[in-house]
Image (cartoon, rainbow, N blue to C red; front, side):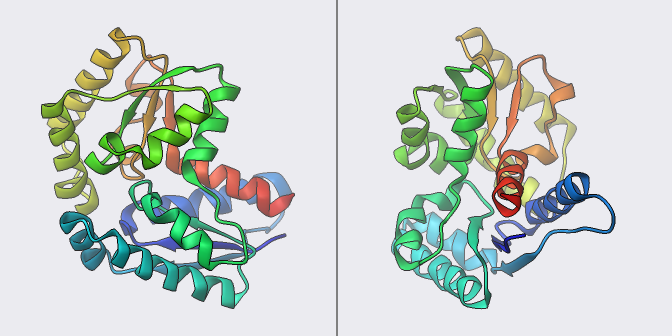
Length: 229
C-alpha cells in the first residue's frame, strides 16, 4: 500500500471527511482490520484565507509547498490538497515536489466522463467558479461548465466561508443551493459539481434529482485507487 499525503485544514471540517472516506474505502477493498497509510499536514486556515482575500497567491503557494515538502520528506508517495480553491497554486506546489500531486479537477473530470456528462453545473468558492484554474481542466477534458449568476456566486461564497467552514448547516442556505442547482439544470446542466469540499456537508444526492459529483468523495476515492494500485 502506498502512503497518502494529505494537506488538510482548509477547512478541517472537510478534512475529516477525507480521512473517513479514505479509511472506509481501504477497509472495504482489503477487509479485516486494514486501514489507510496516511500522513496529514493540517494547516492553519486563517492566514491562507487572508492570502485568498487579498489575492496573494504567491504566499499561498509558499505555505502549501512547505506543507507538501514536509509530507514528501515524511514518506508520502503522492499528495492531495484537500480543497478545490487552493488548486489555483497546484502547479507551483507540484513544481517543488518529486512525488505526484493528485489534482482534484482531473479526478472529477474522470468521474464526469465515466458518467457520460458533458455539461455540468459548478458550485464552489467565487475563486473556483469565476477563475480559469479549475474550469479550464474540465473544459480540456471536453466538459462544458455552467456557473450561477453574479448574485448567486456571492451567496454561495458567503455560505461556504461564513457557515460551512464554521460547521454551520443552515436549512435556508440548503434551500438556496437547491434553487441554484435547479436553475442551472434548466440551463442544460446534466450534473452538478460540489466544487468546494465543504458543500457535501450541506448537499447530498438525496436532495436533488440532478446527478451530484462531490469532489471530496471523488478525490478521496481516487487516492485510494492509487494507493492500492
